[in-house]
Image 1 (cartoon, one colour):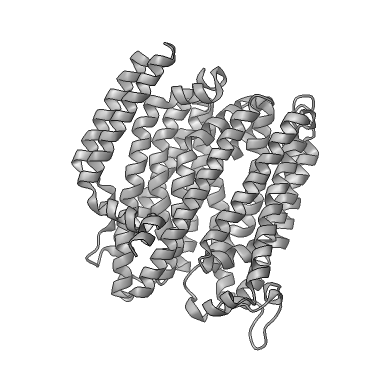
Image 2 (cartoon, helix red, strand yellow):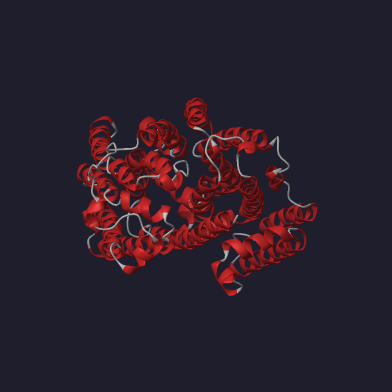
Length: 542
């Protein structure tokens, strides 16, 4: 039981650091977008944030996601050969080069080329964004080692420094070399990935062979162990792990389509102009800010926890009882946590979308479909929150055969999502993307909940009860929704800053009442957050 508690403690600490890291990322990106909107066209923003970012994310995701899932799985336990794992992880680099060539050809010769007078240097930008993706893959073996051994501060420091460097380069070039066009963002992205690789390399160069490494029993002894080579008496790679990687690779391809589906539709089907893509992407990033800096770190960190505590592919009766107990308890608390956060975002996001966009980007964003997009996205965040936690448990508990079967489900969801996105976008513009996402996310949640229910059916634990908030909390949220909506109608947003401030004050009072109801009725959730997700509190009371 103590080992499970240690894993939970480390996963919670990792989640906390990741949340703080993502907060910084989103705040810097938020400020950077607000700044660049004053200097560059919305068409250029659309090409960078949609098309080129899609190129980079597709290359990196397809090259490494399956390897990460498989190599961080707890299936091999302490008998794992890290030499074989390192060898397997280095395959991400040649795979990345292959994807860079294939995707680069598509982006250069099969897609519509932007007007060079409005968006200059598109061709070189495609090459440089592809190069930055391959460059980042050089740190992949080090990243997996750091995650597996819970080096919780390394990721935070590395990505913080890289993000600060990227923002600094972007600001300087936007101000002093605006005519460089896409070269500005390409150079900034190369600096970002270069800093990531440098930070991880410097850390492990200093760590390997040190007294700290020997004290913790780190499995690698020197820098040579980080390079691919064959160990005596064992295969070059663990073929069981390689087959699991292949299963995850098939799934990752489909998951990427679901995750970035709207960008694929915009890029390949030209349903929106580059300018409209820029506006949609800014609203999308603003709407997903809280989701990404809270929900994604929790999903990544607690996937590691569930993968280490549970034995993949075994039913609940074949697991250690104490391990299942703590996994069920943590799953229930996580579901309740993300549900509450999602409900708060949905309620208050509806009444404050127009004001937020007007402050952030002026009439460029607050006029037209902008507020409707953000209101709809506030509802989508609730589904996004629940799906992240349910899928992180399901992916950690599934056997390889179940993963293969789920790939068929993902294929069906991918096809339906692309069709829905195309049809709904022609009908409702950018709003159609969000509606299609909501429908598909609902289907994914239903599948995951069915799996979780079936997994715990023969046990005493019912973690899906975490999806049932207390009645007092529901009432407080309902009252807040009505009050803030009425406040927006009468106080916002064309009646001056004084009435806007009153509207914000009304929301603050309602939010305070929601928090009071939460503290009074969800005591177990509050205790979980204080003891597991707040490192300072835990250290203080250790």
